[in-house]
Length: 120
Image (cartoon, rainbow, N blue to C red):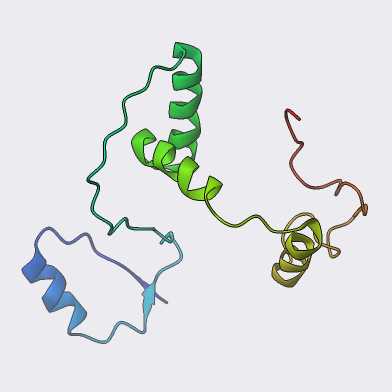
């Protein structure tokens, strides 16, 4: 039976823990985490409707990240090069994600199991 990963309070405890054999640990509750390493030097000040701010905070909470990080992700994802529909379908098919041909009910024009689109 796999043993649980203990909670470690100090760096010294963590270092001592990592020195042992970890092959029998249960890592099933672990989630991948992204860290932001780039220094944040620029500032942005904006006004938003209160309802939009509440919606942003709710979406961030659902993803388990601070809402400021969620807001910082918007320009980062918007600045990425856009893929053609064919390229994005090819990537989705390779990953087996929703909207891929492996998804039941796949339609060439609109995957039935993909999230509904809102707006234009």
